[in-house]
Amino acid sequence: MVEAQLTERQAKWFATVRANFERDSGKSLAEWVAIAHTCPETAHRARLVWFKEQHGLMQNHASYVLNEAFGREMKWDEPDKLLDALWQKPADRAVFEAVRMQAACLDGVVMGARKSFTAFSRKVQFAALRPAAKGGAILGLAVAPDASPRLGPRGKSESWAEKLHASAILPTADAVDDEIAALLRQAWERG
Image 1 (tube, rainbow, N blue to C red):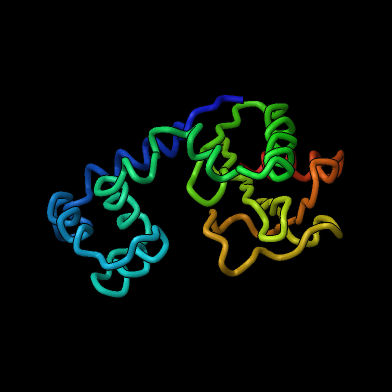
Image 2: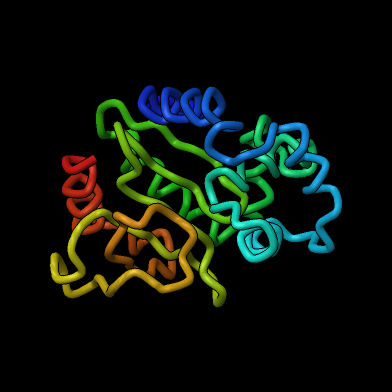
């Protein structure tokens, strides 16, 4: 598995966002960064909501601005630190490592560390994993929720890719079994 942050397709997409940013957003990046520094919010998600509500700037453009304005705070260029911050509890980290091992068996997988989840992509994101509130992790997959009795529909508040329609609760590393490996492969085939 490639331990890069972006797939080739994602890198091209971000290059297009950068190239067309001022045309699409109506202001230069420098102007938006200055606005970002006036935001009363301190949490990333709250800043995104603020940008949308106060300035009509949608999530992708707002994320680009916030990364430029607060990149050092967010540690986007330090994926190991993001992973360590996200997967602090040993039991949760064990679930993450078990999923990572299964993803490593699939060709061309790119793992991307995010602040609130870890993304797994090939051309596009096909899976994501985040710590569960009560321990373990929640796995989002680009498969239909009825693909397995272990799956449920995507949570409404999940911040990962919209194409991840199903989710599974993985309370321990042992829950990452052959069935989860098969579901990961099924999602990977679509991504």
